[in-house]
Image (cartoon, rainbow, N blue to C red; front, side):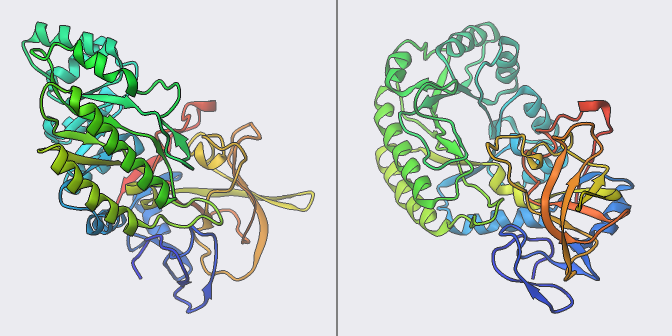
Length: 425
């Protein structure tokens, strides 16, 4: 069994005892009753960090995820990492040797990537509402711009004329379809993302091609999807739409970002995404795209799927109390560090993230336990009435599936508590 890798199925702890747990908990490894992450116990990692709370990211898990993905992807499909999922500089630097390119959502992410030594030619910048200074910085750096509106195209042409540069530009398209059953829909209907598909040809006719090098399209319909059929349908529709819109291009397209949408299981009943049918479909799509749009590279843009299961949030129990029969662990972590685990980042009905007591793995007896942080608000809830081993002061609570949108999507300044540390092992 690989240390620290989350996999479906049954798990054998070092004691030899087998058990079934939360869908996203199965497959964990332990030594002497402690969770192993990247071959180290959670206490060893705590000692290395020097304090709690902290996030720890397992690069071995990231590599294995990418290796598994590469086995089903055709060679003609490029794999990009969406830095917004986890912009920790050490993670981005590590990714530079694992993926073909990077997708940016801000100038800040662009600087992280450039500081990591990543060539500008491997970077593309998307996101609505890019301001003039952001567009200028991207043009000067030489990254590919994904234009989300005609206003951005006009400003890019002006900047190109001023700087004497001809930036590479892809058109972000708002398709007339959505990624069905996705956690967040980013296409179809009125959207802040991209230019409506039906007006793209007219917009292209107004672009000054002497100033802007139009290289292709970006079509992203949704994210966090565990249904292979839905992803396949969206990918098929994205390529078909690109083939239609390519007729309005002044020249051949080389850049077709079809997004990602690959999800990871967080909650009971969720199962890992089946990659095999997606890979087989991408083989067919890539062949069709190459025949209809010679020279085009399909780009798969993934963030959460690459790093989400490789990350863990660790905090320390300060106090155990019982309130009207309910056991409550009060920790030095909380929603200000991990907003998603508290249920306040996109959940309509709060569900528990997978949580373990990292210093009491394999313990047979469990009690109904709620886990909270030190914040003066009832929203500061990391686990609500979960069956967990009895724990007390000094034990380490570990929130799994925390490698994406954990640290960076949390309100660290809320109530002025210290920020968590981050470490890549």
